[in-house]
Length: 304
Image (cartoon, rainbow, N blue to C red; front, side, top):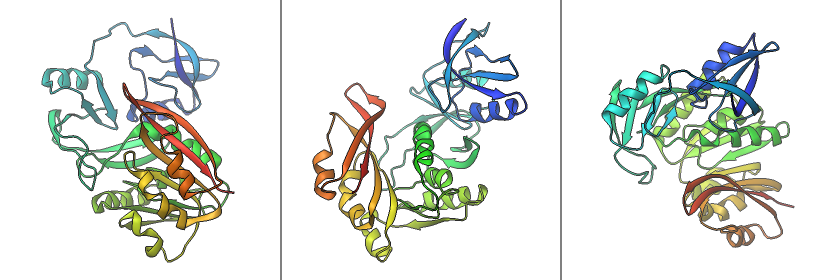
């Protein structure tokens, strides 16, 4: 038996939730789920929401797979490996396409180009995250599933009927997750393709409190005509700190701002934050490793 992070699911919901977790790419397929005391125990590849350490047996057939990331039915390989792609699809029955990124994330819209290595000729998929469904197209708009736990953390912190602004919303994962609890939410992105997908995702999840917008985040104070917010999300990993001045104009006196950034040292953006929000309380937390010398961090900025 192997000790691994896993989740306990009531048997009545077991198969449905298991399939959702598989579609999210967070299930460890090298270990066997098992039933115990009326619960289905499902092994995870990481410490996902509500996970605890559990014991699992290994699957009898364990085929070595190339390194890859899964988003819904898409798998993205780190190498241009057609045979490896075919092998992954054989072992991932919920995946329909294997891709290789032929460019970095680039340009104003932060998109990448992809080569289809195996499976269907598409970069689009349906992605499930904690019961929310979203249409993703990786060639049209950037998306990362790695902030799923962050989105749940923010939901748990929210009060009722908050006014929320997502300055770099992409296809709307924060809007879909937080919108059902928000009193009112604005989700903005400069990429019209992302906002088009966001509109589909909001409708698919019956979210009616979110207003999608297309625009440069620096212009939001003028575009929103003096509107103020209880919570502001700033998830643009390389340059979000450049928009702190705009965020300050949009924040209520008791606002909480969540600034996400790729950093190479602790406290890298504290001077920028203190300049925009003098006297604010700032908490910094590392979310995940990005490279040997950098990591994805979140700064929780509480005004007042």
